[in-house]
Image (tube, rainbow, N blue to C red; front, side, top):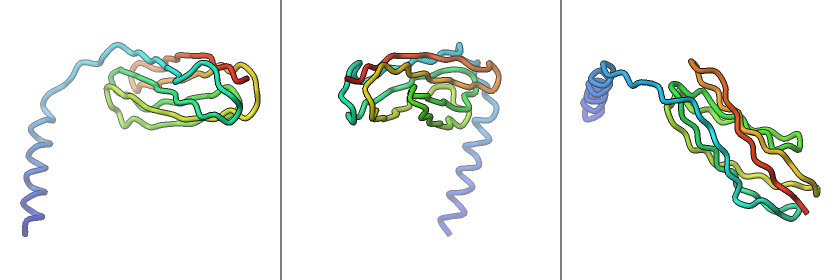
Length: 115
């Protein structure tokens, strides 16, 4: 019996919020690495921060032919943490691409050196 009551309350909350419309934020994305240099096999943490009107997702390309995607479910803002370990020495250009349903795409890059 408590379950139908909960569902009814949830529905009322959704209807009450449906009337308000939020203006989109300016489309923006940034990426930061936990470190600029690492040894082969060390894990580097990347944090991507994004904002817009209806964010669909982020795709990160680590520069070593590995990519990952993260869906953002039409949010206005997102902060996503990615982790990656490079196997070979080199300098890698890391690129994150943000896709927004209305505003298109925007990208940001950072560089990592593996010694």
